Image 1 (cartoon, helix red, strand yellow):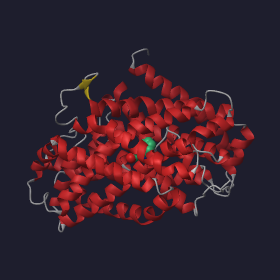
Image 2: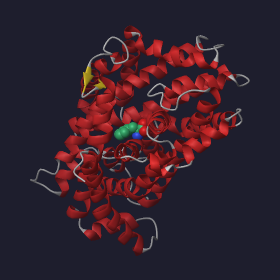
Image 3: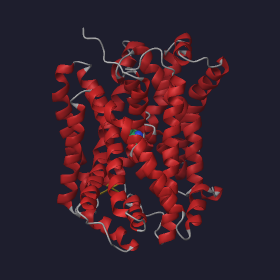
Image 4: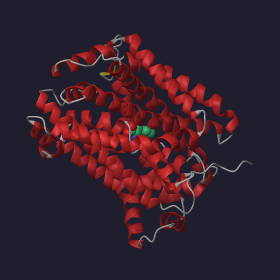
Amino acid sequence: MKKREQWTSKIGFILAAAGSAIGLGAIWKLPYVAGTNGGGAFFLIFLLFTLLIAMPLLLAEFILGRSTQKEAVSAYRQVSPGTKWHWIGRLGVITSFLLLSFYSVVGGWILIYLFRSITGGLASLEADQYGPLFNNVIANPVEALIAHFIFMILTIWVVQGGIQKGIERASKYMMPALFILFLIIVIRSLSLDGAWEGVTFFLQPDLSEITSETILFAMGQSFFSLSLGVSIMVTYSSYLPKEESLPRSVGSVVGLSLFISLLAGLAIFPAVFAFGFEPSEGPGLIFAVLPAVFSQMAFGSVFFTLFIALLLFATLTSAFSLLEIIVASITKNDQEKRKKAAWSAGLLIFVMGIPSALSFGVMNDFLIFGLPFFDAVDFLVSNILLPIGALLISIFVPLKIPKDVLWKEMSQGTNIAKKWFAIWLFLIRYLAPVAIAIVFLNVIGVI
Ligand code: PHE
């Protein structure tokens, strides 16, 4: 049998895991979901969920992947053969499928904006014209579908080439560039007149704003933005050499992701208030606000093109991880099947995404539980399926993997104190499942 590919460097793994984590979640979703769900109160609860539940879960997924050296579905099979637990992996594959179907639609919007900014179609508008412009753009069915299609083709094309070659190489340069550009936007945004109101909105929690919905969305956001609950991180860490420290990797991925979420908020909200937008603008928020910020900057259109290109890259690295887990579960590392699996799964995802792509135009009135198709799939994935996946993983890992194996994986390559192991075990075994269950029960009104 062919030896499994491994990450050639620790930094390659961190960048790929961070590449999966950092994408639309932190940059597109966080600002608009925070904007519709209570601003600072949302961000505070999101932070608590990230640190106390999502972060320990990320370590759990890493441990499962590296200790078994298997992709998602097989990892569960190996730990618990002959049982139904591997359905956690299957659920992850199904969730990834649905997630990518609308993710790619937003990826398409980014492509459209990239195209328009290169061809000059976004320059020289008044700040308040960018919102209506975005609504026009996404309402056009042909443009939205073509863009969604091209985004999927790009994703398929990279994933069919294999994990290392495809992903590792480029993230080394693109992610740092994205950070730097983000810092520039934040500085510009913070120096606008009236910026402070946005900072307070985003960072000062008004506890009276907290509802069970706020908590549900904040929980979903914490899993979404770390790519948790779908066993993607299990798959990625299965390629990681034994010597690397898992807790340190967790720290880097969570740190980077939180930092970019903070930057996204600080880039968007000051400008929202300075320009008189509504924070509850919805999925179009960053597309309406950011071009307006750039239009107030020297060389704004050049910077905007660069920014949108980097955002496209960050979105693609997350999309690769989603398609990768689907492909890995079909091929089980049999590289011969890779091409076919990537194309067939990818094209099916494109088809699944069509109603989402049309949601803001011709299928405007097609509602599921009162939500447009796009929002309904997003809600199902982010607020139901990801938390269920996370809940099951938090039950599976401490229950089925022997304690000495857990400790060995956690302590490999570091001299971490044993008390951290006890704390982690408590968070994953008790706090995570109980908290997720309470949020669900609370939303459906049982408690
Ligand atoms: N974490 C990714 C983002 O923030 C989205 C994602 C979720 C990717 C779940 C994979 C799995 O954009």
